[in-house]
Image (tube, rainbow, N blue to C red):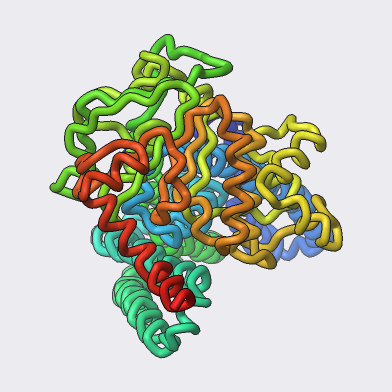
Length: 584
């Protein structure tokens, strides 16, 4: 029950719906138990006594009772549903909010499909128990309490004989819960993996088809689907074993009732009507006991789902605002790294090792190096996507963790290597970081990113709806919209992470010309593999294995005969060869 106690904060605020539902459930249960009593009176005091003129009145009374029960049942079920729906609305919002504030390091290991499964299937499983599971448990207790009370009133010895198998039934139910809960938890995990396979396949369908890996992906899905199937079969096997056992133990009660109850009737110790009423009451006891397996099933699924939801809620928000965090509307743009070392959680090797440099406001710094050398890691520390294990990152001579995350990231325009666009209008995508941006500011940002011309050629211009991840646009067009989005933010610091890698040379030149105006007065970090993208930088840092191998201007680095010169020769060797061939 620890899981439900910890999630109580989400459903207890709506306890009025729960208690209203419970109140009408008590009323419904009480009416249900009246039926056998009316049946006993009809047999003993009407039929056997020959008072047939009372039958119409009994029929009218039963109709009135049935109408009252129907109304009460409606209110009970509706209020129970409201309790579950409103509670889950609150829980789902909290889960989504939590996912927004979890650090990059959490998503480094999390699977999208599994997270989707938790926010859909697991949340729904927990809601189902809130709406129906609690009420079923109370119904079970009420039916047993009221039915046993009436049975004791009719015959204490017969009641005890009827209860002979209930302790064994209780043991079976307990053992069932012990084995079925781990099985359901395994099912939930397997379903999450299955979702992950589907999500990754759909997202990467172009790669799958271009490499003719359809058969491989199908087999990979079959493995996950087979695991989910086997876990379902295992759970069904548990259910198939225990349910007949519980049904048999319940039927023992009926056999004991008919045997001993018949003996009491023959010896005039029990009336015919009381035996029939007793049989109906035993049915009211056996029905909730027989369905107890279903209720435990529901409880086990909700418990397993709740545990998976708590794993998200308990995830550590490592990067948060400190107390008295500074709010800055605008930065000057000075960036300093002091002896900074970064190590990712799942990597023993440091991604950055004792990095030191200072960028003055308005300067352009270039970052170049092989894949994995630490270029992107430097920029991710500026924005506090990650925290260094040692050293300090400062902006305007204050540590970045002294600023609020909102003001820090609102002052940094970030264009990622892989541009992501939302399924919305182009206008909404460009103004995503500044929802209050005017149409004029949006158009100006698009013009500076060399995007305005192709946007106006689209059927609906800036109101054109984009498909998922910007489908319908070329890679270069998506990248230019992403650049416009960063420009629209009007940041103090601009970070271009290989921002022109998806465009052709001519478009790259045009964007660079436009960016020169945008970069004026802004501190800019340019990560690039093409030397042409950063040779105009005030300083270029060449990184190797997380360290700064050399630094300087384009001209200085060319004269050093170091890594930068080797990169230059590789990139321009073919061009020189072609030019020499044309000259010859």
